Amino acid sequence: MSGYLDMELLRFSTAGSVDDGKSTLIGRLLYDSKSIFEDQLEAVKAASERMGNEEVDLALLTDGLRAEREQGITIDVAYRYFATPKRKFIIADTPGHIEYTRNMVTGASTSDVAIILVDARNGIIEQTKRHSYIASLLQISTIIVAINKMDLVDFSEEIYNKIKEEYQDIIKKLQLKNVYFIPISARDGDNVVKPSENMSWYRDATLLHLLETVPVRINIDELPARFPVQYVIRPQTDEFHDYRAYAGRIAGGRFKVGDKITVLPSRTESTIAAIDEADKPLEEAFAPQSVAIRLTDDVDISRGDMIVKSDNLPHISADISLLICWLNPRPLSSGGKYIIKHATDEVFGIVKEVYFKVNINTLENIKDDKVVKMNDIAHINIKTSKPLKYDFYSQNRITGSLILIEEATHETVGAGMIVESLADQTFSI
Image (cartoon, rainbow, N blue to C red):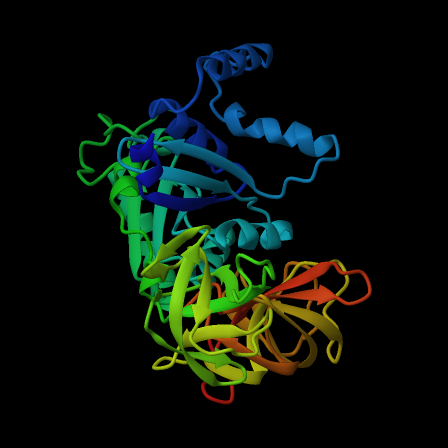
């Protein structure tokens, strides 16, 4: 059991048009990697027969969630879990329609890899560009372009190469770095788990082999040290009369006993005296561990403050430039006041300016229409009631992201990624 717990975890998302075969691909991965139970398979076989299908419809392994939606249960993103001897996996199956851009952003936001499905018969379409843009926006380090339904184009190497060539323009525009192409047939299993006998011209890795071997994105324990304080521990018992520690989850980097630290926003300096994990003392802790940190000095610290190493401070500012994905049917209000939730901090913020919206189908900036509606992505500027301690999203997903909350209803209305200001550079897609 301990070996399983210690295995490396890879999170990946799938994206594609409705008929590109996402559900079938996930079903094939689960089936061919022997990650489904016998009773699940029997249920899918029975359902396939009832629907008049001659073959087992592996898409039913994930499509069962649609019935739950019809019953009024909201499940925006379907998650699936499986493991091979080499890795554990979490799959986020995200919707493909533009009406569900917010759902795709949610599902892909924690992914290390994005699998973008392309129907070999249709080639690169607008949705391919949109899914690629969102993957780029969310700093997903590896993209796998799975060219599906190769069985319906006679396993043509020429069609595969043509789609690869068309996608080069997207790679160039979005400056994508790690892109892999795989010709597959999710229905029949070609190049999903096992190499395809029908495509002997393709000699690279199967999809599963690639998922087992691609590097997981940069480990957050290698980032600059960040510790957002969640809670101050003061037991005030006879046994722990003088105990004072600051509890939270490390959002980046490592902390050691003896490290020189700075508390933000006060900029008070101190030294780490001890690190506790439950009732166990540690000499060193790293992201994403949850620990309690004790300091050598009696420092005034509260929830929302951040402990960082003194030699590497984050940005500190109340003037924040964001790429925002709008999640609510009510449009973003320019000049509107929202609650801003950033790490463990909570402040008020006012939307000062909408610079532009992004046409995520053409990858162009729209400057003449600044009404930000649900599923829109826009570049905006907000002013917060007190400075935030942040990194850019490209450097740290945790300290570089925030959410906007409607003050009256407490609904989460926007998800933001902190980027460099337009005053400093021209932001373009």
